[in-house]
Image 1 (tube, rainbow, N blue to C red):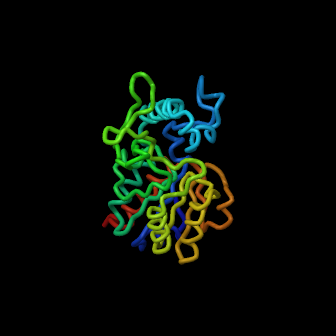
Image 2: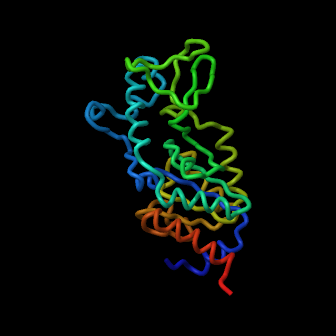
Image 3: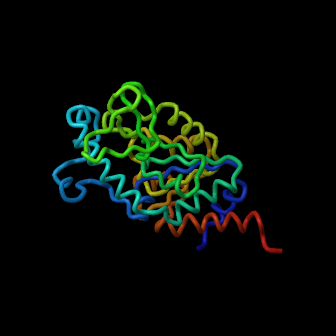
Length: 250
């Protein structure tokens, strides 16, 4: 795959790279949007389940939906784009991967420096004592799990509708966007705030902005380049280009 001379030049001298990923990269692994879902869940909208009030009203139903979601996600695997980003992290001195996804596929692919803006579906915590649980499954009777320390309700560690993003995580993402030389926006239209601020932050601080998406978005007119196609094809090609640039054949 051929890239522009400008992108290759930026890639060659980049000391800091920030990446923002969205649902598009996970869709290539087969992760659905969960809007509508299957069977029982077709009659629900995510907004009706992924919010704190719904959880307090009927935690059993919300946990049953998340058990379904977790099962679907655990049956898919990271795709070549996820794997390539994990490799890219090893090639750059300062690398930050910011994701809007909760599916944990970046970590499963080997990425270490991951900022999860919307949390991680594999983690949970008690709403009473805040004890963290790395992986919780609802009991066999399908009732919501309870904390073994205080008896409080355990909830998925994801950002629900009406909740703020974790401020410390977003602050780190903003700093990474402000200091990067190259900003890659992959599989997201970058129109949902506050995550949509990150490409603008990068641009305002002089970064070269590259969009990788299946189609043009509202971000396309502001990006230096828009590479249309599958992330699973384009991202590995970028990593290979960086390998070639830094290790030229004699």
